[in-house]
Every structure is written in C-alpha cells, then in structure tokens.
Length: 392
Image (cartoon, rainbow, N blue to C red; front, side, top):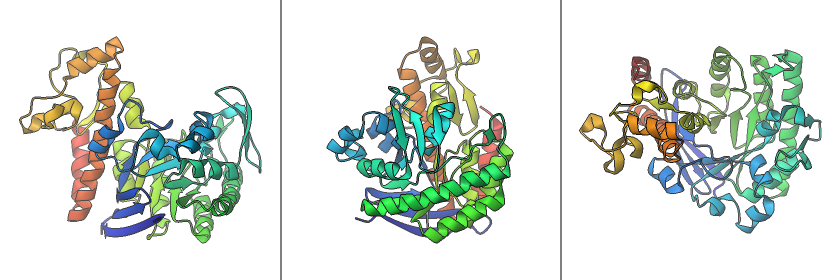
C-alpha cells in the first residue's frame, strides 16, 4: 500500500503555481487536477469509460449520501466504492460535514457530532468524527476527509461574526484530532486530509492551519469557501491560505468553482479542485467554453449549426473522430440539436453537455500542467483571461 506520496516537479517563479504528481493506492494523479463529483457513486449521466477517455484521474464520492443509500452493508459486500461503481482509479470522499451543514434546521450540532433526521426515511441519526471515519473506511476511498463543521458565511440571516467563526473552527480542530485517532484505530491504509476552516477571517485561518500542520496530516484542504460569500471574499481567502500550507504536501480547495476560479486557485498554490458546477450547469443549459459561457436555452441557438465550442475535441463537439471545427472537423452535435434536446427534455441532451463541460474543465487543467512544465504559466494565464473575455 502506497497511501500517499506527493512529488513536486515544478514551480512558477511569478506566482505560487506548482506542478506535481500525487501517488495513491489506486494510481498516480497529475496535479493540478480537477476532480469530477460523483455524489451517489456516479458522475451524473457519464459512463466511467467516458470519464477515463476525457482525462479524469480521480473522482469524488460522498460519505453522507452513500451512508444513506445504498448503505454500509452493500458497500462492504463490494469491498468499497471502486468495485461498486466500476472505477479503478483514485477516489476522494467528502466527510459529510458539508451535507449535514446544508440540512439547516433539520440538524443539531454538538461537541459529540451532528444529530439529524435522515432525508431519505426520517430516521434519527448521529454523524460523529468516528462514524465518518468508519464509513469512509468501508468505502475504501484513497483520500479520506476529516469530519468538520463547514463554517457558514451567514448565520440566521446575518453574516457570521468572528466569535462564531472561531467557535466553529475550534470545534473542527477538536474533531480533526478525533478523526486522526479513529483513522489510526481502524488501520485505514489510505490517506486522511485535514481541513482548514476559519470563515472569512485570515487570522483564524492561520490558527486553524498551524494547528492542523502540527497534527501532520498527509494532505490539507481549504474548506468553508463557496458557501454563499461574495466572490471577492472567496478570492481573498484563496489568495491568503493555500500557499501557507506545507509545500511538500498536496493542497485541496474544496467546492471551487468557475474556470476563472481554477486558474486563480492554481496561481495561489492549489493542487486539487472539485465542484458540481460543470455537471449541474450542464444539466441547466449553461455551457463552459474557451471563449466564455454559452446559454444553450437562448432562442438564438435554435438554428445554429456550430458545435458548443468550435475548438473542443470532446464527443459532443467533435464526434467520434475527435477533430475540432477549428482543425477542419465537422463531426459532433450542433447547438441547434442540443437546444432542441433541452427543449424536449431528452436525456441525451444533459448527457452530452455534461461530457462537454467536464472535458472542458479537465482539458483546462491539462493545459495548465503543460504550461507549468514549459515555464509559461504567466503567459497561459493572460491568454486564458483574454479568450474567456472574448465571448462566444
């Protein structure tokens, strides 16, 4: 068992951007990387084989939802999530902290953990740091996340104050120690990450970071962003925290975000990203392209023969030949056809747009890695901003 090995291959002299490899029990991940989200054991609408073809190296599962359904008896019978969903590459599982936070009034947080009513059948349940570690051990995920309290941006309709953010952060630190102890007791052969909290307060982030580094986790995440805060606050915390984490360990920015967020996150030293945005937006008709975002439901696409992105080589844009319009190809599906599928509610529509959006995100990360390898990340960053501002 490898558990985790992180090798730093290159750094950018003008930013905190870095290039590396992350070796886990189910394979090697090239970083920086975007991780598609497969909450219930599947990335919605996408076959595992298609994920591999578009360059996915690691995907997410969710502790909370897989605990609810299908349950640990089923997951245990399959030896974990890899065999259950037929994915042989690495998997990261969220601890369930964000999901119980999102239950709102349906949950009660205490030192022990979180009591809540199951959204599936109403059963009264208790999720603790120990239970989260036990579930993730059954799931056999390559990267296990500590159970934390996701510090909200707003509390009861007002912005969370410093005292509230401190209480939340300190609770997460106590839970982190309990997670470590239970993880060790279970002899889990994978890797456990700590999560930096502290809300929108830089000095709290530094306190959280220092305490977690002292616990010596194999990797670290920045949590508590993309929880309703203004974009400028998210960018402020992203600019402050990641590069302060240990340089010899992987850094993960949780739940972020837009293509611009990914590029700026890389510039601040982030190695790993996840977000539901490319898949959720695809199902709602918002398409990410090299030249900006496309609203597929707009009537102007009713007769448009172009693919979603003429420069893209995904199956939706370039067809089986994989040759983009920009390179002389004429395969793939038109905007008019995909607009029609969306209007009719045909399931092929969101399947194809999801493939495109994920391909775009994964290809963006591949281009970032190539730019870092070539020592031209700054040039890439400027060209990316120019292309996205151009508009479709």
